[in-house]
Amino acid sequence: MALDMIDIGQEIYTAAKRLQKSGDKLFTLAREYAEAEQQYRKALGIEIMKLRDAKVQVSIVGDVARANVSDLKFKRDMAEYKYKAGRDKSQALQAEISALQSIYRNQTDM
Image (tube, rainbow, N blue to C red; front, side):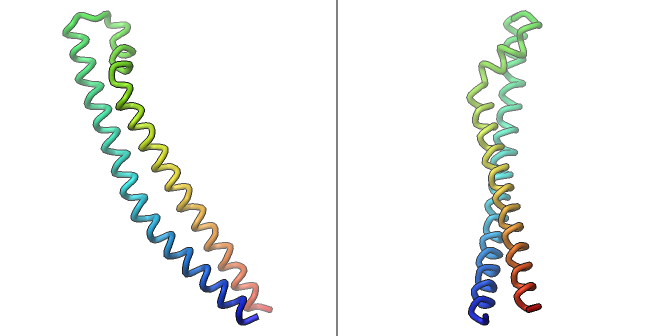
């Protein structure tokens, strides 16, 4: 029984360390997402202005502009999905720690 408790404690410690590292990585991913969003919005605005100056029909300016900067939108979307995946991984680690703590408590109550 003591070995089981030690193993559970070690798993909690290991998961907590992974959670701490994931927080740092999550901050980096959030920053990358924000920067990609900024680049996309800026390029889209510039493209819309160019198309208006070129006298492109107003009804299609937005669609044409988005098509012209679609590579930046793709990069923005990928950054968003990486951030969300990192956030989900962090939440899974929190759930794992919670489950291990419950097991640990149940073992000590026996």
